[in-house]
Image 1 (cartoon, each protein chain N blue to C red):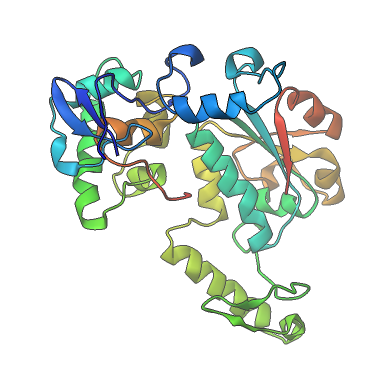
Image 2 (cartoon, helix red, strand yellow):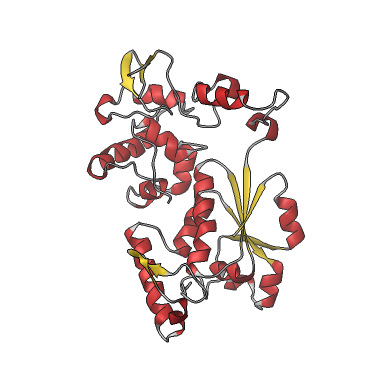
Length: 105
Length: 208
């Protein structure tokens, strides 16, 4: 597993670039990761989703899928596609410093 | 053992940067390219335009209905333009009267075995016993629930909310003697086979 430098810090990532250490992420890192993922401006709406993902992860040890974010987090699916356009599940996981979601649905 | 890389490794989100500047997976893709004949040029995403995928959903059993729905949902999550064309028994998935009671039968399935005991095959003919289809349907739905896989209607709701396009087959619609009010509201239109061939131009077609 490589270590990369993001925001002046050493960060452990997997070969694809997803962060591998839950504790290495903090809210200062998110805007930088968002920039890499093509999400230019993190609004309050983005933060609500990111905080849900961060809170959901520790107990399950698995990143929430898009459907889980919508059904358990109570977010509107269309909104999620608008906030994180293109590949929403991957983008939100990356910005939240979590592994790529594995679930099929 | 640990490599430190100063340039950040960024996952391929498919939309933000041109292929040439993507830092991910360089060694492996270079290795693959060098193994090809010298004149081989792989078409790139930039050459072919954005990806598009069209599923033909032709089956109306519970187990055979899901592949198109699950793959369509996955394709949308990957930012791929996605269409599903419902035809023949697949039309039941977008018909209000039938879509919430899609069933699973053992009959005709030689791969039949108990989910937790794959070494114990079941004779598919047992599916003919009255009540067996109800039982096996309940069992399969329970397994889906445990894995948090939604039912047909909710799968379609998610697909539509994610920007997927649902189309009904004209012939199946006519054969079933239906009107538009009989259909799931997310269906965009009833179209002919020729219309489907036209709209799938430039896309990948997956028959299920």
